[in-house]
Length: 334
Image (cartoon, rainbow, N blue to C red; front, side):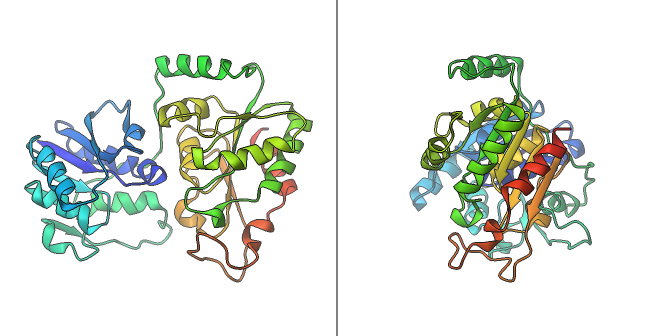
């Protein structure tokens, strides 16, 4: 049996969907399981032994693009497809690719395109996004494994990571602390730069670590703003890593302080002690899933919201103090 899994379109969601993919494999241990994923998330699924292959999905800007992708998928002769995405377009893709069995949530008006339409089960205490994906497996009448998150880093990747960090003059004998001041979703999810500066100073005074600032190319300015206010200069890696390089860097860290974002889930899957800072989003749904991790969130009257940019005073983030975050870091580092 050949099964293709349409991965979520976000890095964090792809990581949180890993237990569902593992459970699918447990139910079909002899099946060939393939991943179809957007280019920016496909490498999350690298180094997973049971995954036969990864099919990059190009951005689909027109029906012509969709048809071309469908023809490629059809050439693999898949017998079943699991949709971890909720969009009509992703279900339509599997439909015109003529995948005989198409499994997914019956959302976004796509019920007619699916052969197995799964309803979301709302179970007490299982609001986390990990269970949202696992419910797709149990909704098919299959068994689910006890969920855990893990990203594998090969020995070759570990060696390349050391060489990469050494090229920046990073002292690998020191503790490596990661700061992730960005969040692709928008500034509403970002703890202010001034707070990160205050925290960095506290960490430097107490631990004398190597501080690395990560992020995308669009978040370089955030890193530079932190750098400009520190006497002991951090190393700016924002915009300088691809996804697998970032996995390697995070795997070497002793601590990660981060906003609610994809790198937060990456660090958590690598079991890096993680302090996650939550503003407009709900930690019951997207907090770090496993230890060692802690999240900090303030109760404010305007929470929760779906704003990308805060139209008010951003109190959900401003009320989180650098001293409070430092204490959380200290506990994780004991």
